Image (tube, rainbow, N blue to C red):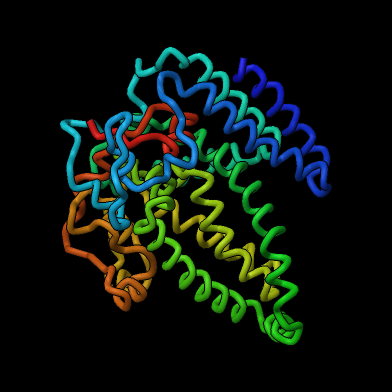
Length: 372
């Protein structure tokens, strides 16, 4: 029942958003995608019970036996939970066949509903995925780091992440800019915005990139050390095999928070649309390339920009690498989070078992951690 309602509601909402993207009706319809996603997730979780705000309590409370309350201890970075490995978890639990629960049908229908809705809003993303595959699959074959199939476990779920999470993140970003960005824009002196607008494009890009990297570093660091932020960011770190497609394996709430934090200052300061476009293209390409399964190195450039070697260690399931390599190498060096041995990681992912399927991964941050 829930998934059927989600199917009808989300597709209708997407059609309205497509027909009126620049109006209040379009924004309302896009926001309805978020509601549809949550309804589908709750309808399709199967035998698991979603927790509400209590799910974000400290681990000591979550670990208490039924009927008992444990006093919360001091907040600890949840990344430390990666130190205990699951026995032979496999490269990516999200793609294991036959893992459907009793609610598997509703999960499939809900996922299909959101996929169709997201494609109704932006069907061009399919072309982007095809172009991305045409570029990065041959590169990964030529410079392969780890032996790995193109259609590895979980690849279909990652396609859904790329399509649906991007649409949901767009909704969250629009809401964030409207709620916070307009106030920040109004509070910024006109003289400051005029001075920035009068600069040449290359200067605006350099300034925007510097600002974004600084904000992005601290937001990324917070997502690894603040427990409730880590609950959403861990979805990205659950990938067990690194490749170009893994770059899109993201929770939309995590991305909404991260992108709002960097976009709002750019909007408030009056950077040009061309600067926004150049920044998005640059960040998009580097994000995909740095997740790719390639053994490429870039010599001294590795001390200036993030490279696949650098970012692979950020995703490594090696205790010495947890919470390291959060941004540009120079920022990691300044703030003590740089780690770059000569070798490559041999393991990726988390000890906590990632649920199978997009909707379950969407609901995962609201559930009790499972490590065995």
